[in-house]
Structures are given as C-alpha cells and as structure tokens.
Length: 437
Ligand SMILES: *[C@@H]1O[C@H](CO)[C@@H](O)[C@H](O)[C@H]1NC(C)=O
Ligand SMILES: *[C@@H]1O[C@H](CO)[C@@H](O)[C@H](O)[C@H]1NC(C)=O
Image (cartoon, rainbow, N blue to C red):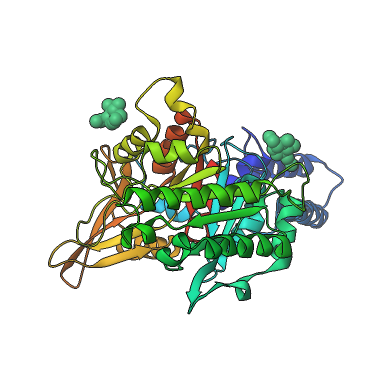
C-alpha cells in the first residue's frame, strides 16, 4: 500500500513505469526482427541492453522518490481523506505513523499548549519534530513543597536546557514548565511571608532557567484541603494567583523581549450542570482573567474504571465551556481566547464484563491491541468518540482511544469558542494526530 502511493505521486494520473515497459519492448523487438541485416544474436544483445537500461532507470527513479516506505507522505490527513467516522483498524495501522511532509503548516490557528512528561521521552522528540505547531510547551517538572517550615522547589534535576533552547530558538515555542503547588495551603496562604517566598522562588527559577513563564496547578489540592469551601480562604487563594500573575507579567522573556512571562492556570472541568463549591466557576474565571494568560481546562477523564465509557464526551466538553464562559452572546465568548481546551492523546482499556478495572493506554498500546484483536471500530455519535470491544481470557474489554475524527470535532469546538488547546500529553498520541494541528 505505501509503495503504491509513492508510485502514484510520481506519475500523476498515468500508468506506472512497470506497466509501460513490456509494451515498448515488444514494439522494439518486432521492428528489429523485420530488418534483413540483423542476426538473431545481435537482436538478443540489443534487447539485453535495452532491458538493463530500463531496469536501471526504474531503480534510479525509485531512489529519487525516497529511501523507504517510512518517508512521510506529502499530504495531510485531511487531504488523504482519513478524517471520518467509518474507519477500519487496517487503515489506522497503515497510516498512523505517516504525517504531512510540511511540519510547520498549521491547521489550527489558535494557541496550542503541549504537555510533556519526563517518564515518557517520546514527548520530547515529538516537541522537536512538531515544534512549529506548538505555541506553548509545558514539561511536567516541578513541585513546590513544604519541608518543615521551609518551601522548596523540587524538580530541577528533570530540566534539559539544550532542549529548551532548541525549541525556543528554532520553533519559537514558549517553554512554561508545570509547577504543582504541593505546599500545605494553610501555611502558604495564611502566612504573608511564605506567600511572597513562594512567588520569589518561582520567579527566580524562571530567570535562572530562561523560562517564558509557568503553568500552575493547585486547584485540586486546595479543594482537598477545604480551602475553596471557605469564602475567605477561597478569596485568599485567588489573590495568590493574581499576585503571582502580576509578578510574572512584570518581567520580560529572555528569548523575546516583546513578551512578558506568562501564567497559565490549570482548572478542572465541572462534572455536572450544578456547580459544587469546589468547582472552578465563571466568577473565578472572571476574577482571574486579567492576571493569567490562559486556563488549561482539563476536559478529559470523564469516565474511569468504575464507570467505563468515553474519555471526553463532546456534549460534556460543550457544557463545561458553557458553564465557564456563559451559554451565548459575544460577551460570553470574550474570555474564550483564554481557554486552552484539554485534549487527551491517551485512551483507556476498560474491563466491562466482571468487576471493574483497566486504565490508561498510549498510542503504542492501542496499535498493539488493533493488531492483536483486529476489531471492528465503532463510532459513538453521542460522545463523538471511536471505541471497540474485545474479549481476552473470557473477560470483555472496551477500548476508547482518540481518532482523527474525534480530535477534529474537538478542534472545531475550540474554534467555535475562540479557544486554544492543551494536550495531555504529546508523547502518548499517534504521529498523524499532529497533522490536525
Ligand atoms: C509549509 O507550509 C507553510 C504554511 O502554509 C508555507 O509557508 C511553507 O512554505 C511550506 N513549506 C514547504 C517546504 O512547503
Ligand atoms: C450525529 O450527531 C450530529 C451532531 O450531534 C448530528 O447532526 C447527526 O445527525 C448525528 N447523526 C446520526 C446518524 O445520528
């Protein structure tokens, strides 16, 4: 299949070289046979030369077209007609590692934040390969912790400075490592000194390592410690984020003096239409909006082993956006550009027959499952996700993993709100997903 495609590209619309060769040779030999001066031996020699020349020509052309089947096709997944609900597993296996030759051509014009984890080195390679499509890179490197009475920032051992510089310089991606605020919230938020200390530590690290800002994650921890349920503490927590944003905004990026350092804040997606006290809601977003550069909205993990199903149903994504931005009107959309809509590049393999179990899978696991079980892929129109079911050791499994179609509909949703994307995480996806970006 890959070989055929390569031939077609060389000979648009015409027959392939091997189709033509036999015809021309038989025409030549009949003419030679008619000539009275030529002996049968000479005819054979001439025939041999013509044949060798033809073979050499074919081989030479083959080399010109590329070293092997793994060479990237020139066209994007859209142009190749791969973005569709009816997909066979064979097509995914044949196409998933083939991506458009032009890796700087963007199909999604809003910002794209890509998470990278140190435990999956493939993410670092993907960032280098597709850097021009990724406006923000967030390596998951840091924790800000309490150690006795002190605050410590852990994670510098993860840092790869060459990689940072290469992406900032060649791809013009901004590098904003993620920091999880592990420190005891009561210490951090109630003591003014600790509060300033935390901000100083973060600023210092940005300056020393040449970051373009940070991605901060703290909400779930604050929820667990009861901070968000208390109006005074909640207000302090929001003030901490505002002050951190102001401090970052007062500095310029070392790589680009036109940019201030950025703060992107991670927020959970509301589970249901009625917000709980610990949910991040529209008022929180409006309060923080002037102080942060974006919200990384975690619209994934809707289902789990206890309630197997699609990872991020489209209708849930839509209702989450409505709850945060308001249902309609231009005013509601005025904050849309601050949202980085979460996309999962991982999937799940859930047990569905007895008990519960199973969990996350990467693209590699997914293609291995496709090869082994040769399943029929189904499109669930309600959630807008592909899935398949298989049986192993008498246990039934359901596998939900993103597809070009499911991702493409989520990109359309983001576009409709003027939002960007945040991808968890780029090392877990299939190569051809990047064509969509
Ligand atoms: C890739 O696409 C971009 C944007 O469409 C274009 O400017 C650039 O020339 C293309 N590069 C190549 C090698 O075709
Ligand atoms: C699938 O869903 C879309 C949008 O929700 C709808 O327009 C379309 O009619 C549905 N198709 C089927 C076959 O149900």
